[in-house]
Length: 611
Image (cartoon, rainbow, N blue to C red; front, side, top):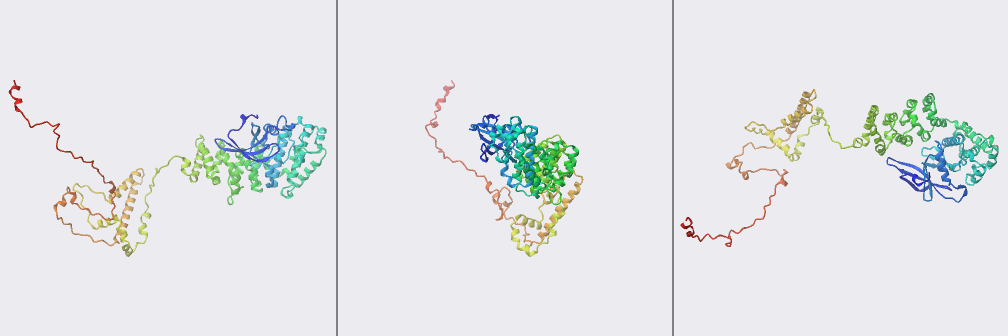
């Protein structure tokens, strides 16, 4: 302990201190792990002090040692400690000094906090046989859940080391109002009682915290304050009650405190007591302030022991895991649920317990809207993807149902991953209602169609349809091959549908229905065309002036009439052939290298050659 090697890796401490004392400063810090980021509190103090009372250990070193040794749910949780340069550092759970929050707390929260501190003191005296010696406001801290934790344990010492000399030397450093003026004398005359120091200090703390609280806020408040005043004024320490007897006061028998105490001690209770407790817990919680219940009891109500209890599943959890909407009888409203319960459920998703996970998945649809998209994608979705790989079939089935609920929120790309493609088509046949929309509508008047003739003439395909309707179709080629018509296209589309539905039993009915729909659409279109004034068409055949017009090998004579509105889509595709540079070669040949054929001497080929 205390060396530099025990320093937490990845810790980042804020330079600004939130609390400053005579011996240390308190800072907020974060630990950056691979999986998540956790918050802690760090106390930093000097390693060397001039006061001989703190030799050989400084106050922060003593506090660190005692917190590490004495562990209790109501004592601040030790994490680590280390030395660096001339400083000593102590890391504990994230806490806030009580002095920063006491002004915003009501009587119920204060009473529950005092109960927690009193239980911590009972543990120290009855189980560990040590005395705290400095119970005051500065030694108490509050967690983010609102629980009070006891700290400031630099003056703690075992009973056997508790002496008048120690109390005398430490008096100047302790809280003066919590110190009994006769504690040294009382220590000598009451060797069998060692808890009177903390009893006096605790009663002083109660008086200070409850002095401005109304008596009607909680039952037995005035009697408890009077009881603590009498303890402080009692000179005989043997007449003062013990710490355990303080727990039995009626002030700590409030229903809210009893519920809190039962939930903490739940593992020690019998099954019969648990069932009876959870059977009536819903009605008791609804009588209390829901925000105080959520802040103080929310962590306990969704703890592991509660989630696994059958009585809690039957009587309580349906009203805890579902926010209140309308008259559903839930305990927490939507605002309170989102603020206090949803963050705790987010952490529970990391628990690898099949029964707990199944319970969360059962109610997931009720609280999915209270998580942000980032929380769903970064925290919940990875845990759900782990669940589909489990061997438990029930867990896998429930996980798949939950993933389906995430698709509308996060999108299929995030939930299932990978790239998607359209692998399924809409194979439903067209209904007659959709194809008969033209008949249901009122046909336009002829004068309206005549005024829109210019717009219709721009559509070449429609004009061509009008001309073809008034002319006889061209005779098929001599070889008997027929061209493709609109009827062929309808039959072709019907054949394609048959291929897609070849495994269906009613394929003939489907084909007939498609043909009827297509024919009806063509009839409707023809009805509209009849309303358009017919354009004059030349009935005389074209006279052939020159026989060369029939020559297919003479393309220059063929004239193609094109409309001004036609677009030549192949205009940019005409190939451009660039010829290479032409070189002129002189036809005259140089006589230097040319053989002279002018001088032919036949005498060289005489008879002498043969001889």
